[in-house]
Amino acid sequence: MSRISLVESPTDDMSEAVFAEIEQELGDVPNFFRAYANHPGLLRANWEKYKALMVHGCLSPRLKQAIALMVAADNHCDYSIARHSTLLQEMGVDPKEVLLIRTNPDHAHFGPKEHAILELARHANLDPYNHAERLVAAAREQGVKDDEMLEAIGVMEMITGFNKFIEVMAVPQD
Image (cartoon, rainbow, N blue to C red; front, side, top):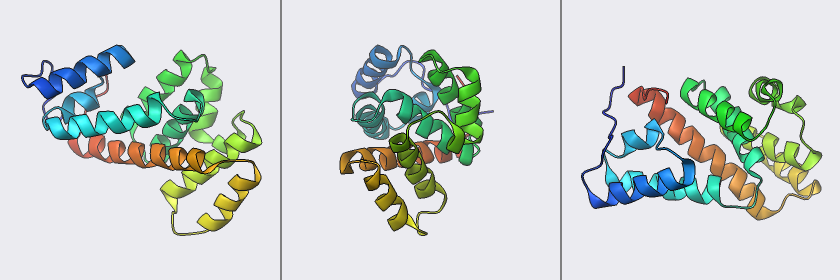
């Protein structure tokens, strides 16, 4: 049972406008955004960050969703595992590949550059203080640019924050 109410119909102009943007972009308003709507400023801030990282940006949508799924799995967030697995499958990724991204991303079917990005994002989530210099150098050797590294780390950071919020507040799956 959720520890926070989910806003179905916002009563303030800011949340109403954000819900309209989310619905236009994603097709519906996911429950975690409905939970954030209890604080319109946080709803707006989190939507803007989500939009900048997941909707826009320089990395492919598939790679960003793979980072999100990998991080959610490492963080043991069932809500996000289900959500990002579904989004990857809706992009045409085979369910076996989705499972591989979730359970063994080192063997997922990505090129060397994408693997370097995945490894950097995973390491930043699990052990950010150890060997980051080596992973950044390895990513650069594969041609990863600064904006790509920042976006990958940004996706990791955002998903980790969402995972913690979702778990603490027991936000139900969509």
